Structures are given as C-alpha cells and as structure tokens.
Length: 69
Image (cartoon, rainbow, N blue to C red; front, side, top):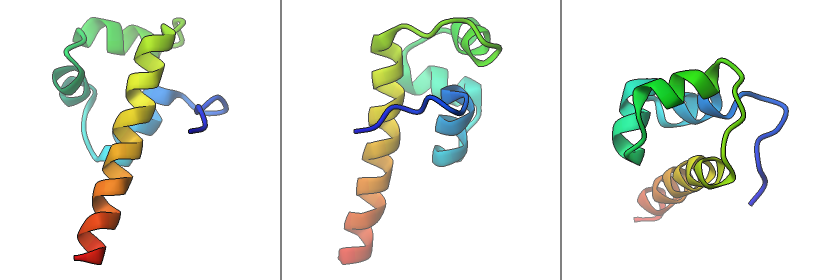
C-alpha cells in the first residue's frame, strides 16, 4: 500500500470516502481538532496516516466486491 505524500492525506481520504472531516474523526475515533490541525499542515503520526490509508483501501475493496456480486 502506497502512502499519500504529494497530497494532503486528510483531504484525499475525505474526498475518496465522500465524507467530511467531522465524519472522518467519528470513523477513526480521533478528535475533530486533531483532524483539522493535520489538514492545516501539522505532522500526522504514522499510526493515523496508516489508518487513513487503510480506510481508503478498504473503501476501494468494498466497491470492487460489490461490482463483482
């Protein structure tokens, strides 16, 4: 799985999932303020970055499975 480096990972994750930052916080159990801070350029912990990448990957796999059914 490739990490998103060129683009803001918060923005990318929200766009891929079609959700808001608040919804992203709810899905991950992270605070809205942390999500907002990272969206504005603060360093994102590796664990959070991995979580966002896994959410996107899971979303894409679920879409693929639904197409195959």
